[in-house]
Length: 160
Image (cartoon, rainbow, N blue to C red; front, side, top):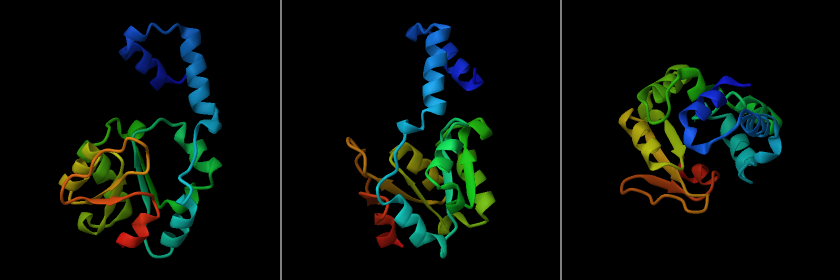
């Protein structure tokens, strides 16, 4: 079984998961690509940005994200990928943002970070990156004063 899921189960003993249950959850999470969906305007937005901007991903995720990105044909759009499972830390840890900045070779003040979590956006802001709250999901967090907001991913095109 994939090690991070075992570590998660050990960290959450109150769930009372048996080995077979944990394996079923792992299989579903890693191999059932039907669990994922794109925002409807994602590919059009990436196409619009591709020729003029360097694009990266900063994500708290498992290795199972790579097949998901491949399934949706997204990998070619990203110049860099920063994943928590590779760095061993999660957003808003400064290493997540610095890793992406180093890979992109762009100064933080020329960088935008989009997220649906205010805490993650504040972490980016501390790194000198311009934060943008996306409120596309139901029950989205409220935008703090002085922070940009978009309702859908294509809203980024209006900010640039």
